[in-house]
Length: 358
Ligand code: SF4
Image (cartoon, rainbow, N blue to C red; front, side, top):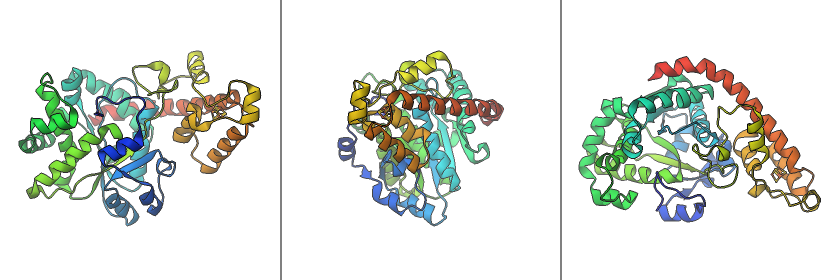
């Protein structure tokens, strides 16, 4: 069972899509005037009902984006992927809602409200703004302070029962009631923008969050009087950690944090990450590398090379054996340092603005 709180390292995306009934997004991507690189590169691979959003984007119509977060540790390049997608939708003028799941953090992880708020402001919102989100155009809120969301969650919970929640999330008799209720608050997070403006909404998530999307779409259909439009969703791949497996906030050796500094240890971390290189230099020159199994190539694809031609050139050079992993990793490190240095400056400017948003 895959739930928002438990997803394995070796996720089979194809099987999960079939199991959950998620559709491939590639055909709709072809109809978009300017698809995001993640979409063109297969990083965003699946969707529910995205056609509504594609139509809105192609025809200059209004739509909303909801992207919740539960702050846990430092922001890394996996978290950045969500912001990259928000920036894309921001260009289309979408209204962006960013709920901070402090209630869920309390119920599911035992985090106190003050700690969650501090982490949300200093680490997440500050980085979100530094990365380019316009603070004037986003709606950031703490679940615990949003009366509209809480009221809606209470109303919606009338038509959800424990058997259903257990079936979707695997809750046991030991699970605290707050934790069982937390997904209904998320449903309210996703649906409440429609109380103000009835336009389609998209939720860009990792596939582990699909249980929330399924629940939201089901509940939306149970309340005819609200006339909710069932939310759309897109699903992106998880970025691989530096050693293979998952990138995790709590495992520094696997993660590139947005606040990493160009220290010796950071360089060592990048230079010793898992590549698709061969055992020896001789073999590499003869057989070429395997970019499909390379964390460095993934970093280039997800975050460091915007231009498709430049990426293709690197791929070809790797495959032909022209490029060696040592050189390739050094260039990756340089790009990371440039990115971090620039972001660090922007973060300094964003701090104050972020603190005022909550
Ligand atoms: Fe990866 Fe670069 Fe080595 Fe190719 S040359 S396997 S892309 S590190």
